[in-house]
Length: 144
Image (cartoon, rainbow, N blue to C red; front, side, top):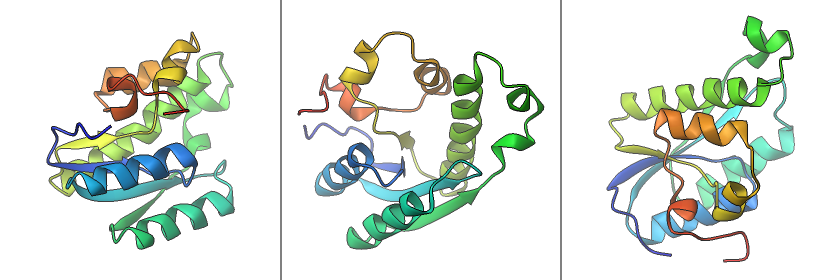
């Protein structure tokens, strides 16, 4: 996969395999990149460490975004759509940072297998906000 029509992007970098591979592929394709990792009550320290190390390895500016997910009254009520609400809060922060950095898009590591998994409220939030999932767009799954 080497199809990146966007010239610049902020990558939602979790420190996991999907976002790491996306970072490598977008960098190799010449996309101007920044990476950001949300740090909340639910973010394991090892993921933050991994994300920062990945950004450094690929010489991409890294931005930690510190937020409190539990500051949101709706999420504190633990509703069935909490994954949707959480993802929306996180990605709104990503979009805000991308705008401040004058970047064209926000990328995330969602892939075709995630889309095929059925009802995924977090994916609905991505779609509503216009977050770009290059792997899913290319029809690439986890094995690809």
